[in-house]
Structure formats: structure tokens, C-alpha cells
Image (cartoon, rainbow, N blue to C red):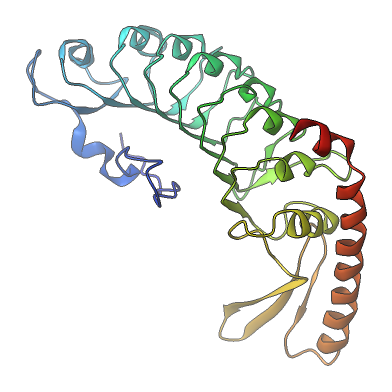
Length: 297
């Protein structure tokens, strides 16, 4: 167990109590005797010979499986008292084993590939927080629809691989969602793809970097999500990449940039601002005429 991850979970509020990633190895069971009543959090992996001791810990609430073997994945389904589960670097053919763990409240799947169907998660009727990162074979997220207990959802890829998302329609079935984070993602649905986000009436916080979706989508969300934290990007953002490089980054995938010191910077920013305002005005009409938004909310 040598790999460490940054902690990408937003810990504002009561959404996450699972230990930060860098602290996971402090909870390896090593030589902890079977039946210990002291163990509430455990981390195990393929090389842990005494890993089955986790089934004897009466107070176990949280488990991290790092690079687990198939038998470890399959057997944890019997841990009925588990409330928090994190699985990293695994290749299960399916995640049916999670579906029977109905006590799970917080679930983290990082670098888990080999499966494509998220439907088993619908059985987790207590699930409030879900973090999905770098799921290589998943692109259809409709399996999440209907998890009415879910209040926090984050979906992320990596800097060199963006997590594909077929569409955002699954969000219509997550009406209790309060926090929605999208990191490195890729979506090719036609505009207005983000209309379902506007239908999340309990949403209080949104995280989405400025260059994952077309500019029109950001303008749409800015108009339709007024009052939601971080749901306002504006036409461009000023970035200081280094002491010698400061740029205006235009909002939207492929929208471009201009160096702050460039002779045409003011003109280009003004032109893009006008374009962005046009998109916002068009968005008002799109929202007003959207039968989906009217009928489903």
C-alpha cells in the first residue's frame, strides 16, 4: 500500500466523516487480534494475510479496500453494520456486492474499473454521499437515478482522462441533492444538456471548472441557478499561472484565452463578454420554454 491520494471530498457540512485519504494507512489492521472492540475503522488490501479479521470486529463502521482481491470484494457484502466504504484501484466485473450493504451512508469509488452498471447502488437507501472518480468503463450514470437519500454527489476523472457522462438526465431522479461536483468530465449531449441541473430544487452548491462544457451551458446554469454557491462563472477568469504568465481564461470548452498584457486583451475580453451576455439572454428563453423543467419540478 504505497499509493496516496489527495483528499478531494468537500468536508463542509455533514456529508463526509470518512477519514481523509492520507490517513487511511493509520488504520491498517496489521496484528490487531480478531474480535477487537477497539476497531471502528480499517484499511486492508490484497497482501494482508489477516484481512478476514474485519468480520470479527463488532464495532467496525468504516472500511477502505486498496487494490483488493476479488474474494475480498465479494465477501465484504456480509458486513451489514458498515456505514462508510471506500474502494480504490480495483477491477470488479460488477458492483452487485455493494447492493446488499444497505447500511452504507458514505461511498467512495476511486480508480475502480471493470464494471459499467451503477444500478446496484439504488439498493443503498441510506446513501447520503457518493464520490466517483476515474471509473473507466462507466459512461451511463442512469443507475444513480432514484437514490432519493443522496444529498452529495461528485463525479471526477483525471487531468489526462476525463470521465465521460452520456447525459445529465439521471439528475431528475436525485431531487434531494444539495451538493453537486463535476471535476474532469466529458459530455457530448446537445445544448441545453444541463437543464436537469436546474431542476435540482434543493441544490445549494455546485462545483464545475470553467472549461468542461460549451460556453452556452455555463450561461444557462448562471441564469437558472441564481442563489446556488459557485454557479456563476462570468465570461472570463483571470489566472496567474506564473510570475511571467497571467491570462484571461474565457468560460467554456475550447473558448480560448488571452494574455493579460496582450495588446488586444481588452478588445477580446469585451467581445467575449458581449457573446456571453447573448448566451445568457438566450438561456432565459430556453428555460422559460423548457417543458421538461416545468413538468418534472
